Image 1 (spheres, rainbow, N blue to C red):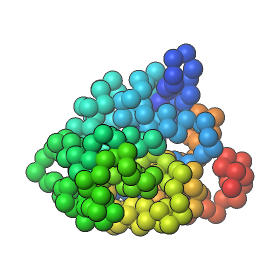
Image 2: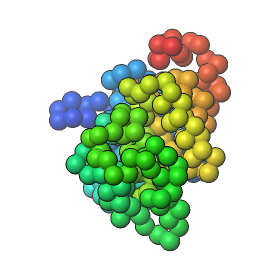
Image 3: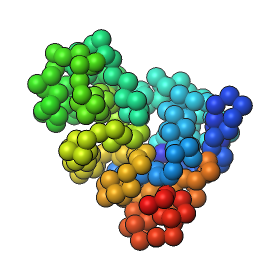
Image 4: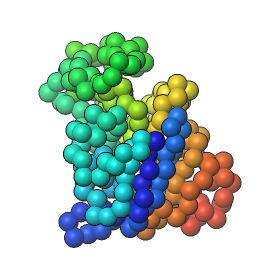
Amino acid sequence: MLEVRDLHAGYGETRVIHGVDLTVEEGRFHAILGRNGVGKTTTLKTIVGLLPAIGGEISFQGKPICGHPPFDIARMGIAYVPETRDVFGSLSVLENLQLAARLATGSDCRWTVERIFDFFPNLASRRDNGGNQLSGGEQQMLAIGRALVMNPKLLILDEPTEGLAPIVVRQIFEKLQDLKGEGMTMLLVEQNFHFATRLADTASVFGRGMCVWSGTCEALRADDELHRQWLGV
């Protein structure tokens, strides 16, 4: 579904990623792991058009998307949940979801606002509260729900467990597991090694702005040397 080849990107004069290759197969869950500052978030932002690619190619369902603005990429079927969550604090939970639902395309709109409330009961009880009145965990649920009501073909998540209490991390894990069971194609950046490798089918390990390893999560869990050298776990 997603093919990234020899991708180069960065901020201004500073290059952060140097020739990244990445493949996400349809119906599969792929994780990107690595220490801080190795280009994981930069890669995601470049895929969704928030950063321009300096070089390389990105294709989604066989079509090139490099150079397209973020709103075009969203309409193609890629939904992005940023590390910063970025919910609209002045809008209610319901309004946040209704706004995103307007981007849903096609006839197969399985994810409606009401289904999000069924999926995340915490949000249902807070539907009239402003985004800035939610806890960190509730904001993360809203950010994921907002992405889902776009009915994406590919869901991209950046550090969904960052700063959350263990009980909320377990809730997020269970919900992503449910999405995986429904066949959702997902790309995840995550620092929590066990969270990521228990969920994902395949993984890439980043180091020094490059992809230094790709394979199954089963193989990754078994490779202690790889853990020590590139992940610090």
